[in-house]
Image (cartoon, rainbow, N blue to C red; front, top):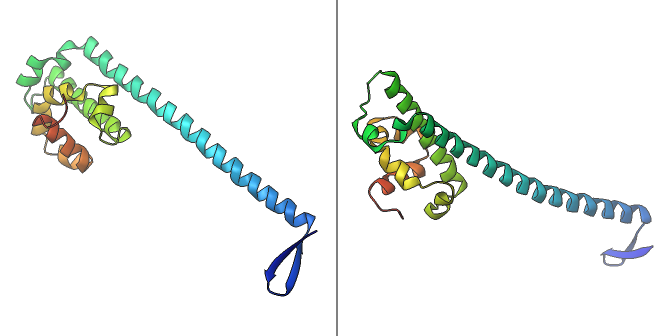
Length: 159
């Protein structure tokens, strides 16, 4: 038994049972910390794989319907056009900006990191018409992301 001095003049001994509990508690803490680190690492890898799959989906849409990512179509598209192509374009833009916001969140708004995933300036500038004509966009996205989009459109972001 090891003497432990808790109060002056009072000796208490730590029994084998106490040591066993202390070691068990330490083991639980270390195990929990290790599990957290491993889970966090796996979560980041899963998130990265998911974002890359969504970028592949964006590219797939652009290949299947080339006009969706066309500068000419994007510049002439008008809100309120109910044609199938116009509706598809509107949904594509919503998908594109939702994807950009997710990447923006993951990268903490850092343009350089964002562009490791996708060249955001090109997408933002190409689909500017869709972004600015929807009054719900500033309300439906994170305010920091809305500010980021505005800065890219004004050319205040790295290109």
